[in-house]
Amino acid sequence: MDLVQLRRFLAVAETEHITESARRLGTTQPALSRSIRALEQELGVSLFERSGRNVRLTPCGELLRRRASPLVAGIDGLGRELAAFCEGGRHVVRIDVRAASEAVTEAMEAYKRKRPDTRFELGRGADRAGCDVLVDALGADKELAGVVGWGGFEVTAFFEERIGVLVPLESGVSESASLRELTEGGVVYPAREGGFRSLCDELCARHGVAPDVVFAGGGPSLVCDMVALGQGAGFWPERSWGDPPSGDVRLVRVREGGFARRVVIASPAGCDLDGEPRLFLEYLVRRLGARWVR
Image (cartoon, rainbow, N blue to C red):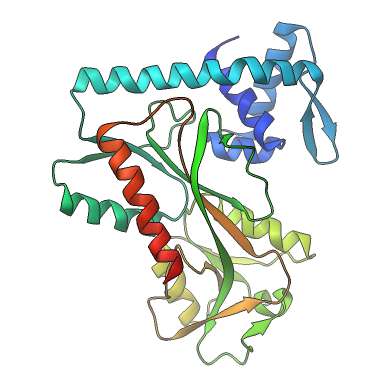
């Protein structure tokens, strides 16, 4: 077995879902399934069993998870420490932003104005080795797996927000409407906002709705512009994306329940951050906390 296999195994063990794990790892579902099967064949045991659409650990899989998790976390922490030592990078912050990118980018810009020597290194690698700060999101109904998740990261803070729907200002839709009514003309999405589109698709499917995607590209501002032009409705997380930048749209609440997510800030498990990474992590938690209460 190798380190990549163990990281992939731990990701599936945490989500209990092959497709979701593949998304987080930045790989395909078939490639992830082949990696898990190869690990099982090498060890001569079954690590997972089917549970509806999900998978769950067998007793052998649970034993491997307990043994492998601290080992992988320790190796990842060592890589980060060595990189910092070789670069003399006391002012380097390695950050992986998979959700709330607008809010996190604003925080990075504001922090750099205060501490101009800071250098941010952005990454979206499959294994996230060497990352100091991870920002991700998951459905509000998903359990945070204790304090440790995402293959060797632990949750520092999380913030919950509703997901509303943008409609044109002159739309006849009321302030709260059914999902089917809101999406009957199709929906628009940003090109990439972590797993936001996957989450919205999953929430729609729970209520038997499969809206047409009429456009996907750009960031939240472009989504807002396309909605204002009448090209479709747009799902909109109410806190992390902030107020819509156009006065030609308005935000409507989805009448069905469950349209919410958690934005999670995490750092490497079992390794105390120091220097600039620790200062920025604390700053990011404070800044997002202030954004959520205003």
